[in-house]
Length: 107
Image (tube, rainbow, N blue to C red):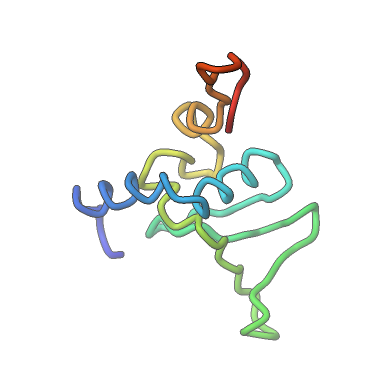
């Protein structure tokens, strides 16, 4: 995406956060197992996973980072910042919420 995201794109990203793949990607980033890079267009690429440098196997010999599946809406939805760090909004989304029946947290 060139330039600033449109309000429609931001809304689409926010809506996508209700799906499992973006939440799983956010959980993985929050765990610290994966270090990501947020590109200028807001897409999220894996730099390291469990300390191992990860590169796109579709382009051998090139130093291309691989995209993190499901992570495309995280930056524009405000779940991670420009540095790939989970924001307060992202942490709130991952926080367990009490259930009326048990009072225990669910994810």
